Amino acid sequence: MSIKEMIVEKSPLTFGDILEIAERNDARVVDVILEEAQIMTGLSREEVLKDVMVELEHNLEAIQRGMTDGESPIMGTVGADLTANGMAELFKDEFINRALIYTLSAQVGNHVIGLNPCAGTGDSCPYTGFVRAMKDMDYDWNTIAETAALMLKVGSYFRVGKTTTGCNMEGFGAGATAVAAAVVSLKNGTPKEMERAMVLSISPTVAVPCTPRVMVPGLCATHIGGAIVVGNLSAGLALNSNIEVNVPIDVMMVMAAEVHPVSAKQVVPVVVDYLQPFFKTKPEVEALITDEVKEAEKEIMDSMLVKAGEKAKTIAKGVAPITNTLGEAVVGGSSQAVGSPTNTARIAHYLAKGKGKIKKVTVELYPELFARRGINMPGVVMGAVFGASTADYKMYKEAIGMTRSKGIEIDVVKGTEYSIQKVTIETDETTVMIDALNRGGGRLVLRDASPSREEAEKIANDLGIVLVNA
Image (cartoon, rainbow, N blue to C red; front, side, top):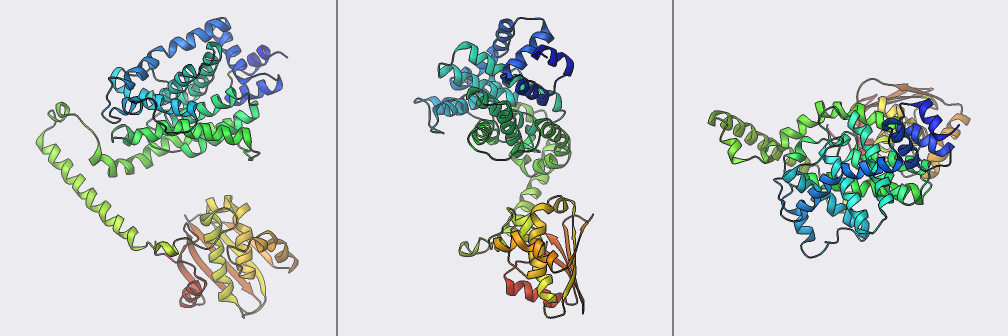
């Protein structure tokens, strides 16, 4: 079956479909994308590529304005600043450095003459910045147009998936994913390598809010600039290492799209509460607002600043000396997912020590920890049965097998209460229980313990396990 026949059969194509067709036909991903475009438009390949470049003409002009006379209320004259005496060196890699500077310049230009949006104007910045860098580095027209087509195709999925505010589906998320695909393509990577790079690039962008960065000075720079950096990093990892990435791109894209409105409803309001006092506005706009409204807003903002100061002090009270900042090593890769439940189990072990032979260990983990049981249960078992520390990598590998050889029953329960990690040890003489809440850094909230909470607290202190109040 030809590429064209496969496209017709599978249409409408997900990006996963595109990658599969390319792989099965030993073709480039961009060839599948262009073939699909020809089918959809009735145009020739050359006409499709020409139209793609026409789409970018206005945005390329915005970059030029952003580097010369353009000024943005949130980005200032960053484009001109970074190019006033030649290209400032933000990165050693000249191509990535240029792509980054042009991306920032595009956002300045956006606030002067606007940008033609994809998912939004945010992701148009890295797409256009990347293309402008290719022009500088003397790539041939065909390669530039093909790469632009690939990036716009990636962006087209985010354009549909973006339904509300959120840089996660725009400048940062869509931008990073498109850049990752483009870098892999330019370096002749395989469809599988492109998929791995794209999945890696989406991961750090999920749920990242947008609203504050387009109102608070400066913040946008690391979002759209981050798209270039994260996309390039993701491509480098996919091309130069065997790092395992087992999530299909379609799953990752859909997950990002599903989280997107949740972030808009839950994350954005909190961020706005704290950052609204720093929103940029215009005198002519403020002249339209009554003094009563301004005064009410000022009271809210002043109150927020007081609240932020108080919370900052609360955080500061818990800060240890820099000579004792790092916790004990945690095997398994996460101080939150492994270290904290393991330490809960260790307290239970020493609370049961000397009180008979262990017969059964019951572990209740809240849904996130339960889903991550592949990494935390070896730690919990070694802590509960052997009292091993979070740094004992040898025991981490052997604990479950050793426990089963002893005939000790292990029961893992999926809890419903947020953050719960409860460990119960039954011996032939007694039953002990530690009811805790999960915290990062190997710490935990000790809510209850039996037969003695006081003894459990002493054990934690003796073991160097940090207990927190909330």
